[in-house]
Image 1 (cartoon, rainbow over the protein chains, first blue to last red):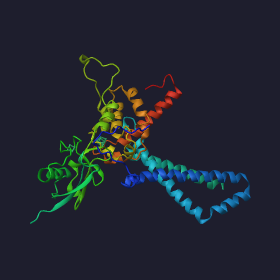
Image 2 (tube, helix red, strand yellow; image 1 turned 120 degrees about the horizontal axis):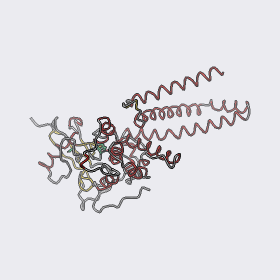
Image 3 (cartoon, chains in turn red, orange; image 1 turned 90 degrees about the vertical axis):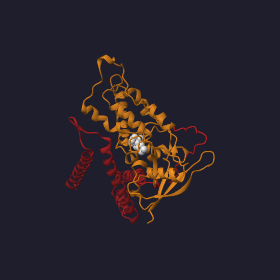
Image 4 (cartoon, rainbow over the protein chains, first blue to last red; image 1 turned 180 degrees about the vertical axis):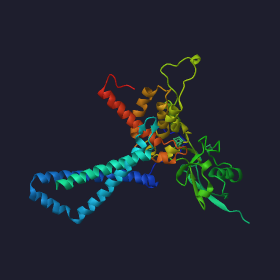
Length: 136
Length: 249
Ligand code: SF4
Ligand code: FES
């Protein structure tokens, strides 16, 4: 409900042009972070399709895998991975700002909070890798 | 020996005459220990007395000399010419605010928002003066100190594209100050400020661009105050749903 404010006569009201996000590197980084969600969403839809195809039998799944090996899909996956990493890293950084962690009376320094995220990331990734390798 | 000079490209706007701001260039002596404000003062004293801008303390305390310097919101009393050498240096009024004249912007909107968040100690019942002051430990002071350093310079508003696009947004400094009082151990006004912060033009309007904190000359980190208020508000809401009768702070 952002209604326009009543304009006072004689004043000059600046308007933000559509290219405002090119003004500062910080704005560009912000826009990139927002765009990451598009790629993450497309990838999730793809994942759902893969799960659906698995349910339709080995032949359908094999066809799907063959299709995903085309250059177009590989490029998409590389780009989507880059955006997903960018999203993850910026969110890890944001937790340092957002989450105040206290131990006793002291506040844990934000870089340590961020580092905690990375540690958790590595641990979870190793666990998933181990699980996949042991099972296959 | 001719003195070295540096060019300032200054935005001029005369109400009643101009429909749009225009740019005027001035050549000023280049001194390593001069700040942009010194250069503006030089222009006003020696070149064009009609140049209009605000300043007061000349030491980064009053918050009135904020302008855009090469597109970045700055206190001009702490923006050294040497950091912009060889120039030219573009000096414009603070972005996102209506311009009254030349480099002077209208403060009304910000002041109204500042008042709206009630940036003062609110008590449910005041204790009589005879009982003495409200005491606070150093740790309790530390909890909010950073957010109390705000000098109302509005640089954060000039850096915030959300405020530029949706001027109804309460904005970084006002929210940081509301948060500062919410954190104060002597304050009991959380319930009073909550609806203002949780309003659609309050903290949820913020998309976390984060540039407000980058430009803040006092290390206030309004972006942190806003995101933490979001967390507090969300927790509050969850508690009120889970425990409608007991989830009060
Ligand atoms: S939060 Fe920082 S940038 Fe914003 S008004 Fe206060 S001192 Fe200025
Ligand atoms: S003149 Fe007071 S902050 Fe710059």
